Image (cartoon, rainbow, N blue to C red):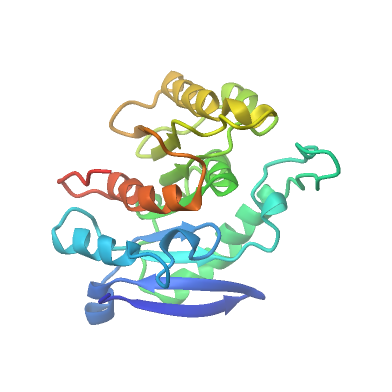
Length: 255
């Protein structure tokens, strides 16, 4: 790996920041991608994702960017848009503190990152991405802060979440110059007995709703990963593909 990993802390929240090779050398202005679950999607100790990204940088298949992995204090609260009951008996309810969490990113963390690094601050160069509930809150950000996040990555987003499909139907969404990537594994939800069994159908429905709001092929992507289940390994494998589509230069990175 030619880039640099920096461990930081802001407002009592741990951050893992990946700084790409060209920024290490030249400090030129750079896009930023905010990543849910800290470094889970680009774990440099377990996976070779950063090496894959750097190869894509080198081959001019992908713009270089800063990755800001954000620690979640309690993901079932921070990654959910509103309160909802647990899906399992005696389980913990979803806290629905997503607005507060996104407000923290936009009004505090982004200001800190933009002040510390030479970043491109406009929405076309600001992304947010996550998997599962992290994908749900990333997609929610497209509605709450459309002028802040122009690149949205929702890897296996939990669109089964109570009321979210209705929310998508009811809410207007800014389309101009915004891009949304979504994906789902074809085997997700097959073993579930609750609403999660509709995982694939809900993600596909979410895509149809976005199309009805004005998104087109150039700014909306849905990938069905044949044979994949809902797992960290699948999320990590698709992470570079999601970023390549959102921040592509010209060539296509195959899943």
